[in-house]
Amino acid sequence: MKLRGKIALVTGGARDIGHAVSVKLALEGAKVALNYYASVEQAQATVNAIKEAGGEAIAIGGDMTKQNDVDRFVAETVAAFGDRIDILVNVTGGLVARKTLEEADLEFFEFVQKLNFTSTFMVTKAVVPFMGDRGSIVNFSSQAGRDGGGPGAWAYAASKGAVTTFTRGLAKELGPKNIRVNALCPGMIATTFHDVFTKDQVRTNVAAGTPLKREGQASEVADAVAYLASDESSFLTGVNLDVNGGLVFS
Image 1 (cartoon, one colour):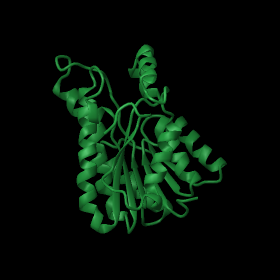
Image 2: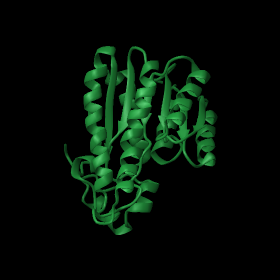
Image 3: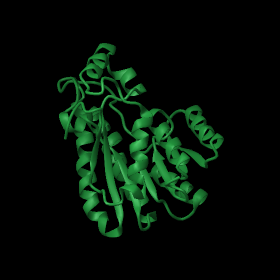
Image 4: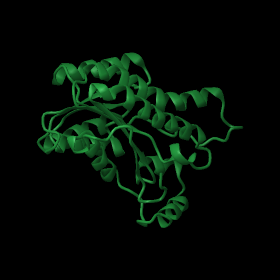
């Protein structure tokens, strides 16, 4: 249990990849505070899964694009588990919709940036004062942040590209405090995200063009998060790690 005694805060931690991350961190010994936005049922199911496995977890609802909700999430985590946070995983985000430049307006563009990038900034800024020595932040960028994304995903890709650069810059700033900052860049992972936004034939074609000949699983992404959160990756910071089965190389 490489995270025994650690306190972890996971935004968007109740479904799909977030669920897998929350459960994995708990199985590795961390006490987990997970945030959810809409589904109390999914959040409770995640907490139940952790407790049934012998772990500790709490679920806190809130919108990570709103400062009051971010502050409350951090405050309730500290109140429940103590006055420090060792691990932050910023999973919150989404594509929202596929839109061409002609179809998109400023409101749509700004919302996508706020959901994916601004939320990461806000939560990180709120958590860092509670991080002591050997803290670890794991952000979620995307393969789209590297290659521009698929049709109509340019706004999402731009927001994830910002997360990639934020990760690198913050790694330099927080390194002297012995806080590491890394990110994952998932490719085609079998989640609700692609159930909603990607056609079945496109998914089949992408899987066929991937060296490993399949989509990834949320649990495989969670395994990478646990590694980056642990001391096993103690000399890694500023890394944006591809998790895409070899589909795209950095």
